[in-house]
Length: 368
Ligand code: SF4
Image (cartoon, rainbow, N blue to C red):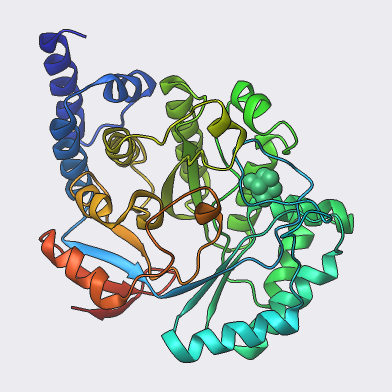
């Protein structure tokens, strides 16, 4: 694209942002096609501030748990899942899980448990309900953000209950919110290529819509940097925006960069997304998702230095202390599995922002 055209496109989009107008599909694609990275960052930050954002950058103290990596689905981008018979396959009992979580709680005082799993065909619905109940009873003041929409759909198949019935049972056992995983890229073409065994995206939307209807807040994600086109990324974001218009139940959007290590994509020579692409996706997400309050720069995936830069590209959350993340580690993420609060505070401050420790629902716990 010629420089003059680029300037014109970004200028037109800037006018829309300043006027509080919604960006459309063509705007989104044009933004992703722009190579003027700094202008994109500035525009995204402008949009964030125009919509009421300030200097606060959030993080939560959280513990990541994975109760089982046994999974029937075999997504091609996944380095985490195993079949029951593979070495390294595990399924942890609720008792062991609780003991482990309590030990971690003494050490870090987390306020949230984030847990996602493989879709094991070797457990029943009671496994999930009883695990939720056991965690809740052992730590009633900890927010339980458990199970992706794909897992909820899996439970629906295990139990014969509709999504609503599954969510109601989990909520009465102590579920607080849903993480955003399982969304990948919604376009059918991409799903057929990277996750042919996964349920149709309509199910993902049905789970989130149903959760929102029950007053259960959720998160939303996009796994980018594999086979998807710019158009398919924008289509994904607009579908999320449409549901948010309808329900208002998404707390935050988390873009997830694809990590090819230990997947079929590594053998085909695929490489990580570049820093430029990661920043572009953060900026364009912030610009397009005008109704989702928070965009996270997920440091475990992009590294803390890049997450710090992303705070100037529309992100206002760096996720959290993330004690013991395994899924991105299995796929080669090298940013570590835990971050101390002091380091998050230092990094946020050095970016010129105000560090705020939050709970899952974005209530302030402490401001530095
Ligand atoms: S991404 Fe989730 S559903 Fe897909 S194979 Fe991995 S664990 Fe299973």
